[in-house]
Image (cartoon, rainbow, N blue to C red):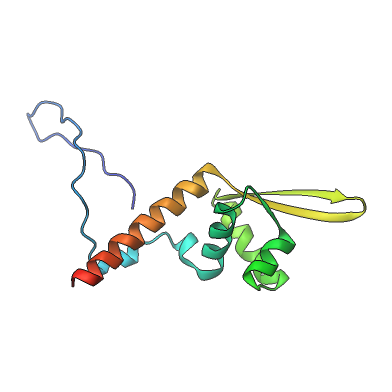
Length: 126
């Protein structure tokens, strides 16, 4: 799903970038979805964080109706991808884990949503 660089043809002058034509999604495009975000729990985490500046572990657990282990595994995967940040602190003696969406995470979510919209539009046309 990365961007392709324009390659000049042999002997041709340097290619000028042009705006890409509107993409028509094909069924095979579903295989190119961002697998980090596409998993249901991770999509839920990223979506919830897109709607709030940050959320605590307990907030996300409640919103997603997830177990501690399930949430922490999926949050770690998103953190490893650079899509969310995790800040640990203490509120008195009680540990507090807070998550926030990074700029890369927000951009990945936007790409994912655009991709899904293209697939839906293609399915409706099909």
